[in-house]
Image (cartoon, rainbow, N blue to C red; front, side, top):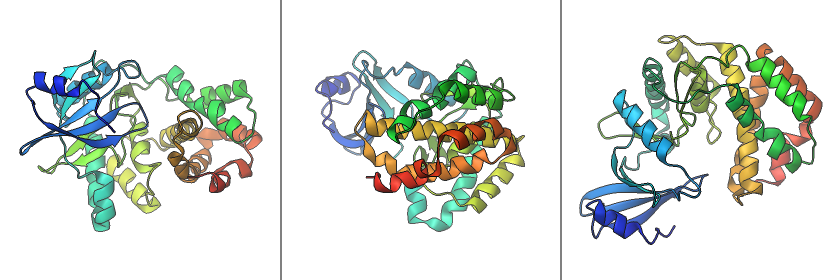
Length: 319
């Protein structure tokens, strides 16, 4: 986590001459984050090398969210050719760690995150690209592409695609709301004014309301008690329409995608730490597949992925 050599010059142009640059975080992409400190002032420097990351969607979504009344980090300075963006610092009170330290606050904080989604789903999606069948299929296709060979299996990819086409057809054209696509406890910040700050939203699309509910309540990185999940679904349903079948469909689609992504991070990118999450993701996927709306997809998994290639496989492989 050494800052790029051109970072001080960028900070000079942004009015942060002489600021200290400290490592903050990396993520599953090529993006890296640094905290910039000058006296009592702080900001966050995002390093997104332009040969690997297109930061224009991040800027566009951040401004869209601000326009419709939500807390994305304010853009303080940007140089896309250099791959650098200076952002408002949301601090260190991330939802996951706050709940880990204060378990009694879990219900309250999840309720706040659900209320944010209900508010977001009442706002216009603007000009975001559509979350349509080609996108769903491209994401779900990461499972046969990366997961299957990693566990020594071959896939009937055409049958897999046909199964998803059949299952997702009832909801694939619902593109009415902003879908953040990675809305979970590691991407939500608790801010000093009591509001929630949003992170990692650059891939936002206009899609179905159930997707971000799944992201939050079927969290690949932490256990969400089924009773809490149910209570939060009921909380959402008290304010906005909720479709149980869509929740299962998009849960299965997202979890199949995540199994593929985490396997790719291991095989291609040398990041085996994500393998520890695979058993949890399998539990979510198998529960989602039990819904009648997933019958064609469940049949494919039953035919092609035996029990020993599912959650139990990762006991010997997780870092």
